[in-house]
Image 1 (cartoon, rainbow, N blue to C red):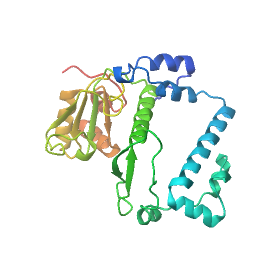
Image 2 (image 1 turned 60 degrees about the vertical axis):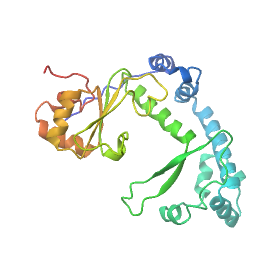
Image 3 (image 1 turned 90 degrees about the vertical axis):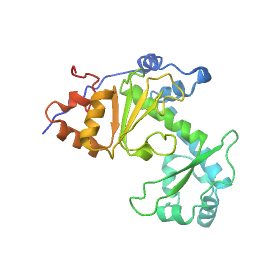
Image 4 (image 1 turned 135 degrees about the horizontal axis):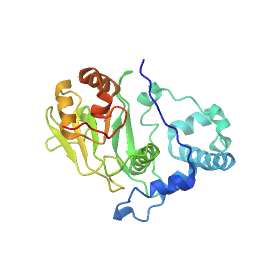
Amino acid sequence: MTELNVKVEKTDLTTELAIQQQWRLRPAYAGATWFDAMLRTEFRDPEETTRAVAQQLAHVTRYAQATVPWYAQRWSALGASSHDFRSIEDLVRLPILTKQDVIEQAHALTARTLPAGVSLRGVTKSSGTTGRPVLVPTTDANNAMFSLLSQRQYRMYRFDPSATFGRLMWANDLAAVAGGLNPDGATVQSASWRFAGPFFETGPETGFNASNPVSAQLAWLENQRPGYLLAYSGVLERLAYAAGTGSHARFGLAGTREWPSR
């Protein structure tokens, strides 16, 4: 059985704000306060967090009742309204939303209007592993939130934003190339990290299809030597078995940036 030695550091708001400063915002977002504001929420008093959650819950439920037919109809049938949801404890009163509802009632579950300043970005879909994939409209706001959460994770794990970020993923999870998806055998290169890069100055990103042979993946890692590697767990397992002893140092399975001499 392999043991993982994980070091847990005690931290505080001052420390985290200092670390956040290592992430330089791009000029277009130099005045943005979202990242620092979200960081501060990690250290709020429980009572303040409870009040903030209640305010957001009230806002979301009012919006849902006013613009989403499915919720308006269900709440009306229950004799309830958005005003009945004032705390986390009240969430148990919400009607259960099943995946079948999402598939069959997609139109009724789509908001008729978007909040001021929010624009439709596109459509994403679920994997479909439990049946038919679910199509989900996305906005620029929730896409930005994904970037916010991604960068928070990088900060928490003390990623160096200047390093190269590697991805071993299916072609449809990598950046698109001219003509469509990245073909097997080819490397897709980006000047910055996929989710943090739009907001922050980062190192480059390099990607390779997980559908390539394991031997090709190992050769790619030896050639690219990314500071960080994102891959599916099954891909990492196959790489570890193929690489043999010392694989964690060979291609960063333990998050190390130490590479052996060529």
